[in-house]
Length: 589
Image 1 (cartoon, rainbow, N blue to C red):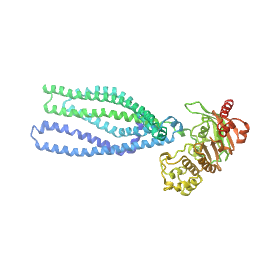
Image 2: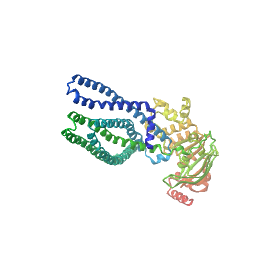
Image 3: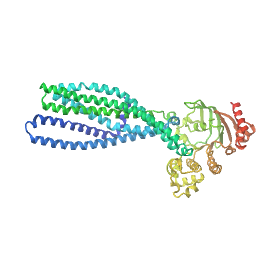
Image 4: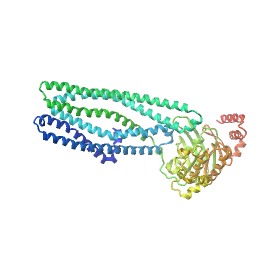
């Protein structure tokens, strides 16, 4: 019932079309009653009494109302589908807006292809149900009732005998409907996996070709494709049993009419005209039942899709613990106070981490991969919430601020740059959608990308392809830096921003980053230690804890983990240095 109420909400903006659709459906059903009624009059009166004029009038009248029914059916098909499509579009918008509000943890646990399947395939099934559902139930329900009343007028005993068979039909259909429901759900899960596999393979096509693993990807896809075939086969088997058994019951109706009606005719309990009319009219009773039976598949697809839609809509949003204060333009003092963090499905990533960063300082985080450096960066803009402890900016708990206002104060440049399909201009303006042309140019100059852009025939309007595939790594990184310049945040996070670049490109981008860091509190996650020698403070992070801290010179003097890391990079990756680092980190635990 709750699911139905939530579904009905989407009809409210389309009340006029829905009402007209139902009126048109009613008139179509009403016109359908005309043929057997006129047939009875003709057999009982017009033909025996040779009233040819009335026969012609009835024929012409039927033709006129059938022309009207043709236009009514067009209205139902066109505007009914328009209503369904608009409802589908509204649900898609609601789902997209919901997805925008979901936390990072949701995307950690759900694959993109499966989410896309819910937004496309599932919503298409819902759209069909939204249009055909009320219409089929209304037309079939009215026709079923009206035809039974008319059959009772012709011969109520014969009508009751036919009606007595209906419970057998509903018993059979309800039995197989449960199997269909389960099979349809498995089918939707399977097609979602196919979409997920396809999305992954297409996104990674360059890696596949580089490693010549086309055969491997084909095998992976065929596994999910075969799983889909099996799920659909199971669904079709359930559907086959459902329709075959229900059609058999309706066929039996015709046999009963033929047999019992023949007996009634033989015993003169019904005349030949009424018997002929009854045989014609009983199809009006059987047809809507078949219509309802056929509707079950559509209903099953639609309700299964809507349940999966509701699952997304009921996910806990990111701002469920959002503060109410608007974060002002901050100075940039940052304080971690005994911060611990763990994902839902893992052990602790951070353990009682505490440190302070003063406004305008540049702080570096170094250490082995998986130690917790990136996690620290993700906690500051609240991509994840701390499991324990507190993070303050300018002596105010970040949980007190709205997420949007907090994140406006923070800029992030990552190693893996994501660019949207579109132009260079579109991607730079992503940092500030209201920026002027002059601000766009100034930001691109500061990011050292302006000269390259001007050398292109289409300049800032150059299309970069999906995820910036037409650009080099350095060009993509400079575009990401330009949009941070436009954003102009008070706090800057550089998460291994240059680690994937060659030395020449790194030097060029490092100049842009140095310009970007001026006057901002900066946190640098560094792989190449040469880039952070001038940091105000360096923290060595390992196993979710701070092992060492100090300036570059202080840490070198300590002769600890940092010095060993430094030696690893500048002494030809000496194996003894690697072993020494491992021992020092073990001792510091």
